Every structure is written in structure tokens, then in C-alpha cells.
Image (cartoon, rainbow, N blue to C red; front, side, top):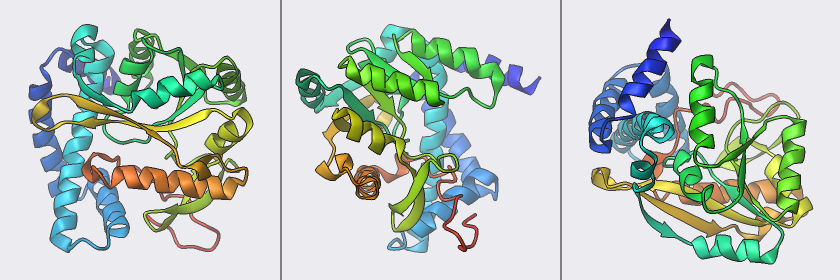
Length: 292
């Protein structure tokens, strides 16, 4: 029943103007920031550990703004998946660095778009997939009622999807071999034996090695990309940034250190738009106390 209500609400919100969605997000984010709920507690702890240079008041303000921005992301997704496609595409107001994507395809080795949970990552598929042959990994959501909503929502922008298993990884290699584009979310705590620890905002974070392996074996062009949310509900600014050379290092540890540093540098430009309510540091090195 709860899942069906959420699905119905998602359909309803999809047709509201962006400004209305953001006003709702301002209220819900502020509400969560006042309590000791799971989202606020995780966000608060992550910000305290990752931004020790901020005063307590500044950390509190960043926590509140992060919860507001996270609410915006959540509400925007319904609009992206179910709203008018032309109106959604028109929300992209500015694109910087697309020439790097075109140059990467000219090289002929494929392009890996590294898309951290910064801004609204769903907007990247909205822009890229209709313009470039693009494949992304897809893991069904915990809320089964939203599975078809998300699947169909992404496919209508011509995204191709691959499962998050060995078969899906083989598909990614095949896509790059055909000189196409893949998208990778690099900042999730990976499954057992599929990650190594590397610093992220000064905290050891279990970091996927898949991106490093893909870059090493394919010799593809690697770009950091994110959709920055503009103020006053004016839409989004897409960024495509060449990855540092060390991201493609043959040494996996060197690579994942560079990946996390690359993501950190981007997050510091718009810290409130990062998904700080995610338990990024849940897995700890052996012998270290629990983070959360």
C-alpha cells in the first residue's frame, strides 16, 4: 500500500512546475533538518567529519541546505521520469566542456562518464543519451513499485541499461569497444571484494575498483560529469571535465585515490548538492570502529 501511494504521488508531482517542487523541497528539507531522523543524523555526521574546518553553526547550515537540495533531487526525479520530455530537456540551461566528450569519441576508444551523486545525475542521461549512444548500469530500487517507472523513464531518453552483475560489466566493455559512452556512479560503497580503501575528504572510504579496471583495459577517455542545480529554480548547468591522468593509472590504488580526489574537488564547488545522507563510510578498514 505504501509503495503504491508513493508511486501515485510520484505521478502527481511529475506535472508540477520546477519552482513548486523546490518550494515543497524547502519545506521538507527544513523539516528533516530539525529532527533526529536517519537522514539528518547521517548527513550531520558526514559533514562534521568531512568539513572539520567549518564552525558548528556552518556545519548546521550546510546540513540543512544539503537536506533541502536532496529533497529537490528526489522530487525532480518524478518530473524527469514522467513529465513532458521537451520541458524536462529545456531545464538544461548551460553545458560546459562538451567538446571533451566529442574529442573522446573522435579518439575511437569510447568515453566513460564518471557521475557522482552531485546535483541531479538523472539530468545527465536526459542530455547525453539522445545525442550519443549511451549505456548505464542499472540496479532495481528497493521499492519494487518504482522499478518500471525508473526503467521506462530512463529508456524514453534512449538510455540503454545493463545489469549490475558480471554480465552487465561485460556489456560495458563491449560498449566501449564500439566507441560508445558509458555512465558510472563512482561513489557508492561497493560490494565485498570489489573495492579498496582510499581517502575521501580525509576519511578512508571503500571505493569501487570497477572504474579503474574499465579505464585501464579500454584506454577510454574519462570525464567527470555532473548537473549543477542553478539557483531560483532556473534549471541545470552540465559540466564535463577531463579526469586527471592518474585516474587511468595502471596501479589501481593510485587510480582510486585520484578518482576520490577528483570527486572531492567537484563536491567542494557545490557541497550542499552532494548526497551526504548516504552512508558512504559504512564499511571500515579492519579493526576500525563503526562510523555510524
